[in-house]
Every structure is written in C-alpha cells, then in structure tokens.
Image 1 (spheres, rainbow, N blue to C red):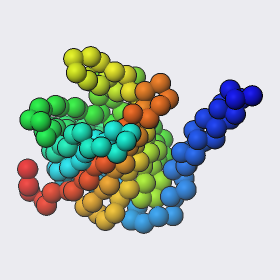
Image 2: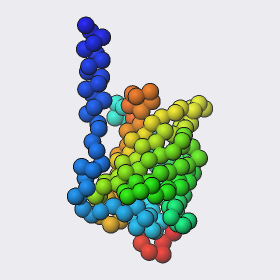
Image 3: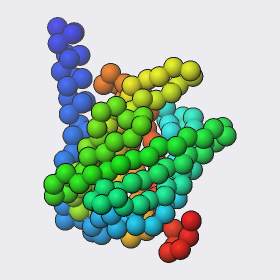
Image 4: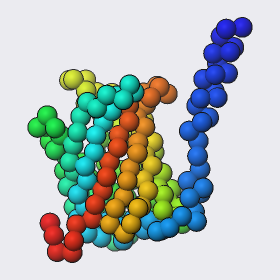
Length: 178
C-alpha cells in the first residue's frame, strides 16, 4: 500500500507544473522573439540547487543576427568562478507561435511555444559537471516585462527529478550598442 501511495503522490506532484503556455495568450506586452532579439542583449542570472542554495552566478552577452527566417543567438557566458562558455542557438520558425532550436550542447532539438508575453522552451542539455557530462532536461519559462526586459525561470531535472533552478534577467541594449 505504501508504494501505491508514493506513486500517486509522485504523479500528483509532477502534474502540478503543467501550465499550458496558451494560458498567457492575452497577456501584454506581446513577446515577438525576432523584435526582442533585434539588438544585442545583456543578461544576468544564477543557478540554485534544489535546496535553494545559489551555487553559480553568471553574466551573458548575446549577439543576435538573422539568416533568412532563422534567428541566431550567440551567447557568451562569464561565470562567477571565472570560467567562460559559448553557446550559439539557431532558431527556426515552426508554424504560428512555434520555434525549433539547436545548439552545440543541446541534445536533439529544442521546442519553443510563444503566447502573449510568455515563451516556454524545453530541451535536453549536455552539461559538464566536475569533469563529467550530465544529460539534463530544461523547462524554461520566459516572460516579457516591457519591450526591453525579459525574465527567465528554468527548472533543471535529471531522470525526472529536479536538481536545480535557473533565474535569468535579459535586458536589450540601446540601439548601436555592442
């Protein structure tokens, strides 16, 4: 009986995080990825363990460009421990309010859904941790606050168990800034 109750509890907990991005369809301002990333973006964030402990802070410079219908986001990370990382996303439209994305450390293809001021981004990442590589799943939620500010809240899990959270604030730089 204990195992059945435990299974039911796990199923109930896992269903709590299943908000549909369409829930935000009427929210303003409307998020237009191409418009938001039409200029360079600077971002600041942190990674927290499941316990809430902040274990890493970082800054990101995002250079953007268009290649036909594709949107390229070239991200340059600087972590609080002095390490650096680069990730280049190639985003391709996949129908109304949907995008597909690839990057060198993303396993397979990422999917994005946009509605109103919100975007949900799901993907599997090859994450280097202490000389090993972990395959982790990310469930990113981004919310446009104003035309220049985007907030990102991500849940990172391994084998269905949350290992941590990422909070990230994006700010578009003024025209002509690099």
